[in-house]
Image 1 (cartoon, rainbow over the protein chains, first blue to last red):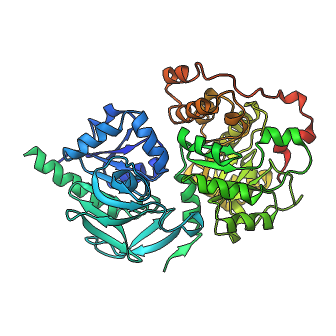
Image 2 (cartoon, rainbow over the protein chains, first blue to last red):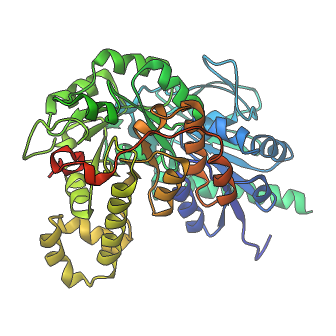
Image 3 (cartoon, helix red, strand yellow):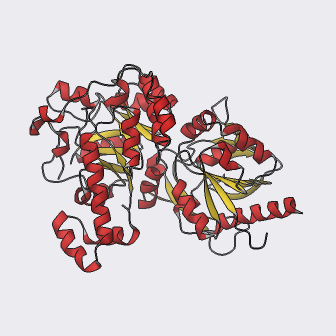
Length: 201
Length: 294
């Protein structure tokens, strides 16, 4: 791993792509925009950004990204979903029969804090992060209603699970890419580095 | 402590819409078609701009019943329009729970001098602009998103091109200026100095900028993206076309893949006739909606 620059993909269909790219550059990794399945081959990890989950879910199927992302994630590629990205990762979405990537053993409630006028900022205690609380930016945010036994809860706000991890999969209800706080991107980078170290032996 | 309605959550909401298409709808049925086509949001209206043009008279905020029906029908965000300066229409829309308010020149202005003070609201606003000065005046009033105006309801892209080109070239000019020149530029274009200084330093508008007013085909939508828009509003273009489902999907694909010309060629085939459209020289100055707003 020494001397190697990590390439972190960002699903580039719609949403807060450039914001994540900026954060990735600021932690010394290289952002790769993933618009086509071929780009997946070169990345060490993938971020599913905030956007509109209904739109993203429709379009990743249409553009042939759904199955390749799912396959690589199941082989161990680290994936970090923020807001809409969390919904894409979930096994079950409350009030819907269908799901998107069905990777993480969680049930989510979409827009669980209300409509846009209820969107808010709040400090979040995030397990495993040192220093001050994390600045949580919640925009029509989902939350995790139930999590499987393999899922580690990382943050709770108003009795709702707002961040969790299951092995190589990381998910947050809020938008670290809208802040200058890089600790969650660093956290994800560490997940990728451990995964790479395990695979490269 | 949770804080609602911050600048960051208002502007952030628009950031989540980037690279997307926002479609005008007048019924719950149309809203579902727009959502299935991949729209990132819908604008709930009583009439699309081309019908507002045809109807004449005073155009006002939509009947709240329509807005509520659309909100119930879809899970994507719902926007609605209030008249320029109509503080109470804006408060009513906020109370209904719409996700974004468009203080729009498509409706008949309620105030010939002042726009709504958008900072007072929890819900975010999008406003139209023809040039950088107008965009920055709206941002100073609290707009969390800008759309270049174009000429609504015409199906003619020429004004939309003019406005996005104008904003982009003025941004490039401000970036290239020395700081000493910014105060004079601020006076020249009627824009707050602090916002000009911010653009000078960052190289871009502080909020997301979509294009509107005249998008009628997938190629039109891709052109707006090519010229630097963050996304596209389609008013009459989808539901005044021959086949709204196909047109809607093609415009979404074209916006998200605007540099993929092979795909654009495919998208432009067999989608039926676009809306008819109006040549600009046939519109008198009184008929031009883009002139509204100050």
